[in-house]
Each structure stands twice: as structure tokens, then as C-alpha cells.
Length: 192
Length: 50
Image 1 (tube, rainbow over the protein chains, first blue to last red):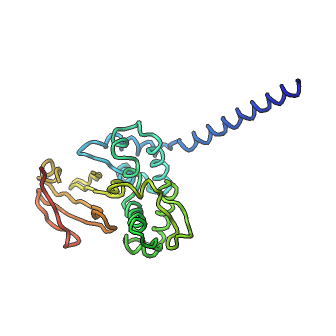
Image 2: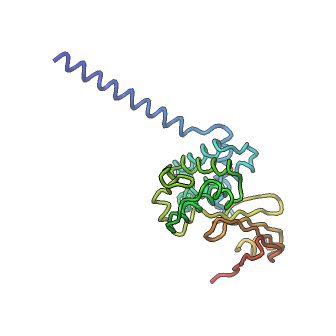
Image 3: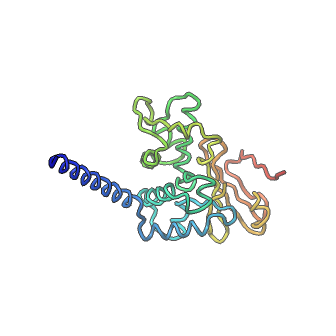
């Protein structure tokens, strides 16, 4: 009897420990740095003005925060996890707000090939088609993988990725396009 | 296009765009609501609505 009670308490304690650890991980992933918050504040104020669906990369330039893959991914992930923040996220989806033009074009290159039953393009072919360096193409593919838009699959050949089904069937690839507007005063924003 | 022909019709507006389905980019500049340049030159521009 005593042994069963002890076992139960240990089990409860372990469950609590796992729950708390899981929450801590989620909180850490969900946390924005001070500069990230400035970027997000800019976006929340910009979205909807002049039909704006401004993306994170443009906002980084606007508030003069250094644009790195990690910073964009952190802010983009936060936007992905928080559609309640703004109607623009719910209406247009987080993808169009989080991805850069290069990432969108790379996603489209993979979507087009897979949809048309063609071989997956190699990293070199992707880089050439998009007009970027191979290193940049690799980094962009990594971002798309981290966002779970594509999944690594070496058996496909080429760059070795599959597009997640949800994005293959997306019509008409709404979130993999961009319309970036630059005004004479330097203001930039995206529309859809 | 709505912005180019209305709110921003008195200024220079540059639009960098993805092509409708491919992986190429389109760069278009407007001066006071009128097309000033397009790259690639083969760009077909539809303006209007219904």
C-alpha cells in the first residue's frame, strides 16, 4: 500500500516536472528580444495601411534592426504562433509575412517542380533560377525547412526536399508571391 | 495598381514583384501614375478593374 502511494507520488512529481520543462521550452521559443518587439510593433502599426501586408524583412530595415536569418525566423515564428495579433495575419496567413522574396521564390521553384512531376531542382539550379548565390539558397532552404514548409528527403534527388502537402495543394500559391512597393520617400511595404 | 492610380498617382512608385507563376522577378516603375520602366521588357501589365 505504502509502496503504491510512493509510486503514485513519484509519478505525479515526474509528470509535473515534464509539464514545467515543456512550458519553459515553449516560453523560450515564444519569447521575443527587445529589438524583435520593436519590429513587431512596427508591423502591427503598418499592416492594413494602404493595403499593407508588410513582411518581416522590410520591417527590419524600417526600424534599422540587423537582418539575420535567426532574427527573421524568431519574429516569423512568433507571428505564426500568434494569429490573434492582427487581422492581416489571419486574413493573408503568416507565410507571406514571414518569408523573404528569395524564400518565396525558392518555395515556388520546389512547388512547381513537384506539382509538374519534374525532378527536384538542385541547389545550383535553384540559385540560378532565383538569381542568388548557392550559399544563400542553402540558407533559405534551411529556413523553409524550419518553418515546416518543406521536409528533407534525400531520395528525391536534387536539393533533396519535399514540399509539405498543404503547400503543394495551395491554390494559387498565394503566400509564395510578393508585391513590394517602394515610395519616393523611401517607405517600403508589401501588398497582396 | 489601385494605389499607383489613386493615392500615389502624383509620385514615383517602384514595384518589385514575383512573376505570376514562375520564379523570376519583375521590377516596374511608375511616374505620376504612368508606367516609366519595366524589367524584363517583356512584362505585360494589366491595369484596370471591374
